[in-house]
Image (cartoon, rainbow, N blue to C red; front, side, top):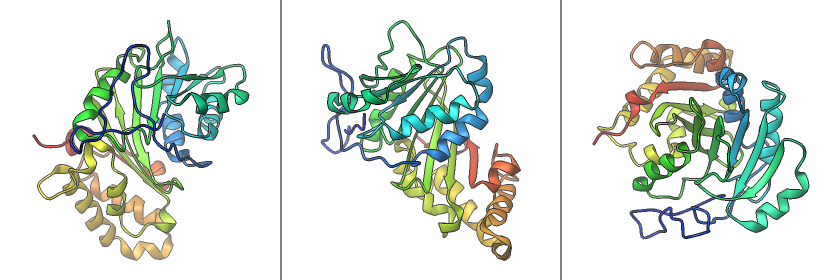
Length: 278
């Protein structure tokens, strides 16, 4: 369900009319391995959530014109919990019909939107990637609240965006109360010039806040300074340089990332440190 809309530019807002899914269709572009960074983060950082779930149901909301990233997501999560069930949700009935031949035990595709139509069940986790990108900033909280209302107790919404090859990505972990907990940035380090290049992939709740005076702008600026400080480590590889910059950030920012995950090109920071002002 690639969707679009916006409260502030005249574009459609998230809506639902009687009997119809919540959301609006867009182009639904996707590519194999586009979401590998967020998939691996979920599998590593939230393995306990999946293993503890009474009902190991995961929803891939808005998989796009091809179900390839849903199939990859399921394979990666089954490495954590073999009995994970996956439901891919798309608002376009033609996309659902095209995905149906890929169904197998524990994998199905249904038409729907933010309302997460899985009757009688509450997913442990919902991944909604490149779904809110074209909505207005004012619409984001409502979309979160609708999706999070469907989560199981203790469940998680992972909402974010990435570029088409999946080399630059950013996402939020959002709890059942529809409040974000953390922001994660992830990059293919061999092609990265500066950490602030990730600004163009910030989730909708933050992308317009990357301006002086906003916390996320200050965070990215601090990251660039740390990156510059450890430029000599670039001779040893971008992984070492990124990891050293993340460690330096942790002196002043509530960074959650372990050294091993930092070397893989990730950094996770508490939402409270980067949340928009006002």
